[in-house]
Image 1 (cartoon, rainbow, N blue to C red):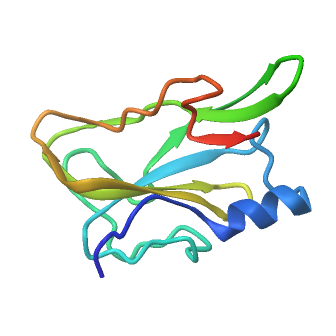
Image 2 (image 1 turned 180 degrees about the horizontal axis):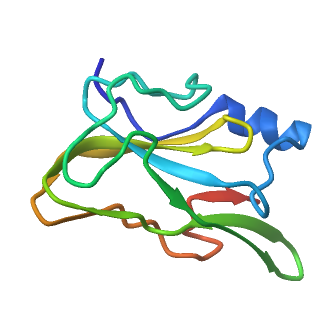
Length: 140
């Protein structure tokens, strides 16, 4: 099944409510996937199914550092989480990615690149800016 969009996973929402996802202390990874992967909001955990290979990419992906920030104003507040941008070398093709919590095993979000992305030198997943209006996860 093809990628169908970007998703925050249900396990992200339940993990936030239950207090089991701890962005300030848990370890997170970003895994790359081909278009044969079936990832969506129902994805509950990391899976090998459809994971990409090539270059110096290894199964499970790469650690990404989560940074938690708060933006306060007189009439609102936003808590936001940004992640570091991982990179691999060599020939790699991927259609999307999954960020997951290594500590709990919970899937956080699915990233759809929009089409296959191929690199023959350095494959970098560039994360959005670390701001209250652009970060990957924002709670308003």
